[in-house]
Image (spheres, rainbow, N blue to C red):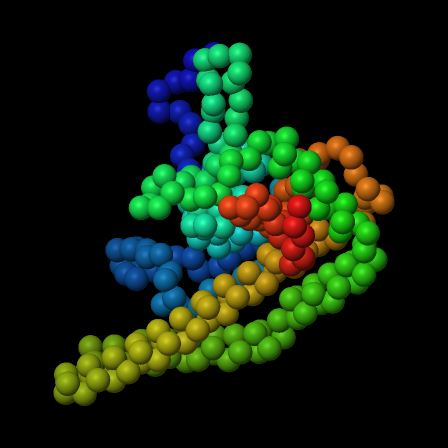
Length: 295
């Protein structure tokens, strides 16, 4: 069936759907606010007025845990530091030790019976000096991953206990929450003072120099508090994303026996943070709990 012209969803639309808290049963109030009641003009809230986040405000259509995993993946991709590619399970997971770029797939002998896909540094020939890291075959990556993961299974119980302690530390955001509460109160107070300052200037004659100085002072206080609050919210989000990643790692580790013999794509995605390829042929796997194993 042919697709009609103009049909289809763009990246921005899909991203807005995947990050909309309404689908998990939550609500963020005052995303927009009225700036002109007579003309009913609305503006996107960029911190001018307080916002309120309400959990379980209505029936979800997406499992909240699943939604949170998606947010964790967004956070992971944002923190990669390179352009993300999701065309393969190995994309954006294998890093060149020489230049720090990701490995990407390349097709050799595409029009012959010897055709095969190999992975090599995407920037191998881009710089003045060619990266010395070798290319990798998918079957080699899989086999070396299995060897590395099986080493982890040898100390499963100790690793799981360490992971529980890490999760406890990551999810304890009491100090962050306490600072956030103070910042949100500061933002509300400064917002009120700013609005009052504007109203007083509109209703009575006063020194514009003094007014501007007062107004700029309130704005500076607001922006300082808002920047710090945004930084703390991002810190909380990253801590939760890491805790979720460790949780997925723990689940996969606990579900496996003494050794695994077949490559599992889901296992790879759940437990590997990255694999670093070195010029001498070493491939070092860094797992979600921080463990590094050379294979």
